[in-house]
Image 1 (cartoon, one colour):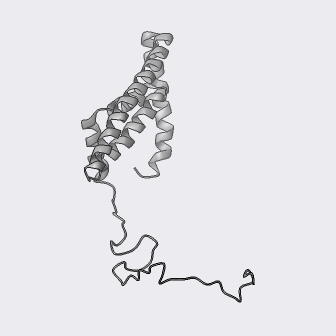
Image 2 (image 1 turned 90 degrees about the vertical axis):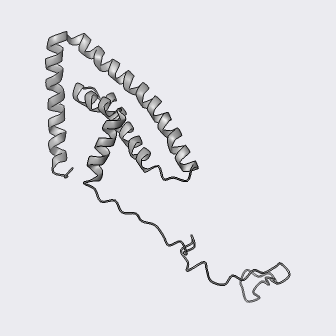
Image 3 (image 1 turned 135 degrees about the horizontal axis):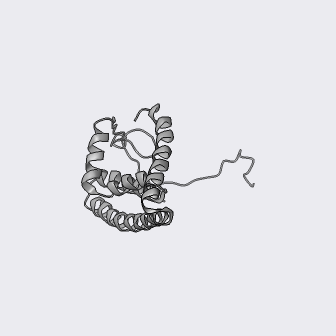
Length: 161
């Protein structure tokens, strides 16, 4: 989504929400409308908890199996977004939130987004040690306690004579 579209969406979404509140509130009344908003927030919380825990178990099993759970991580982000949308009062955001809880729709959203973003895999060389030094394939000198003895520097100001 281009950044110029974000301010436009921040203006349009609240206007759509207000319009749907007016239309639905006019059809079924104020209190049933407010009740529907509360019920969707409760359902969203339950769905977030159930699908979130299921997804965490799937991610853990993929990691234990040595697989990178990229799809599950993306689905986790979409489930979190769906939960936020369902907790946000409004029928438009609730509809979008409920749709994001459906796995085939999440897959379609991911395929759409994946075709428009550039994924860069950044990783270090396998021959580089974690401290950022050179190759780990070089010679290693392993000394026993008998081979190595540290004597304090006599010129050091902290050396007690």
